[in-house]
Length: 268
Image (cartoon, rainbow, N blue to C red; front, side):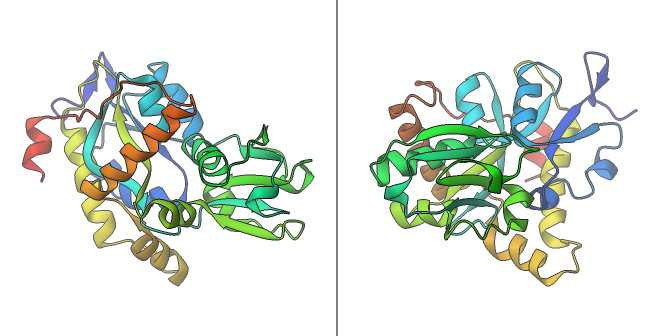
């Protein structure tokens, strides 16, 4: 048995997103932490399962960190962008200022808040907001615009919508800051043992050996997304959090606290 990998009588339960943009962060994770349990789900459900104590650490939408207010963050790992993200897109039949009714992907939470921030703070409109269930077609929604995330957004072909707004690019054009979509959040009381070190090593290996043959996948992961949580990313994250608080979409007074162990320090 690997020391420190069991929590309260069960393996450390690691929740990750089953999207292309997550692949570098869980590369070789099963080999690096063979007794950990890796659970794949959509971002919103991972957040719910972490809150319910069904997971010990999970790659969750950053807005859920601020809404919970009790988690810590594994340092220097994130899913972030410094411009276009490609996998978070607002498809619209009208320009931003003409949107009166918008459907937000049920699998999204950080991006849903980002869309509302852009609509209200950047473009000055307050449309009616409805949810788009994961099993519903975007084209069937009776709305002016629809937000899709992940592989669903990247595969979408919606001829009924004349515009496709990349929210990563919209944020960068407006603020000049990177945008952080997700982080590894650790629930209160969980001890990750060597799993924290394994997550850092997975990121290192994943970025070094993406292991993807398709040219688009390689360009997407190597040039579009960034996986560090450095000073600029933290600045963008703080700005997003403050705007979310102003709209009543996040609780105030939550700071960003990092998870620390000796194993994690040695892995840097």
